[in-house]
Image (cartoon, rainbow, N blue to C red):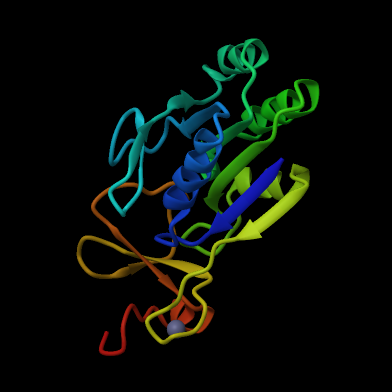
Length: 189
Ligand SMILES: [Zn+2]
């Protein structure tokens, strides 16, 4: 069980689709899943910012049992899960059972923390349960490692409180800790 985490725009979906491609190239079958919460770019596809896209099954508390039954019946080399930070604790525990019972690796890709700087409940669960961890890195506008997600509302103001799940017209910026604290999205902001 893997947790591959990053800030926004670090290339999580691109990395997921690359790993998927590597399995397929070796004639191994994979199962692609994504949280049903985030359907910004597509309802049923995993979409990378580089233009790659691929169909995925939607995962949530309602579909997890059927998906696990599907995993049991098929001999997948790997299960790849996008937008894992939106999953519930219950779904992640159930998938960890599938990982153990059917001996299939499951790779969860997601954000570690929300725009307020706190762990998502799902990310906390993944940090507790997974046995392998990897961070995908990207940089702040200042050149330092970006470790935080800064949320800018539609009015241009920086948002630091509210619902941790925030999808919409607002814009995310991946920044270093110092510039997250200062709320600076670029040098002249
Ligand atoms: Zn910075």
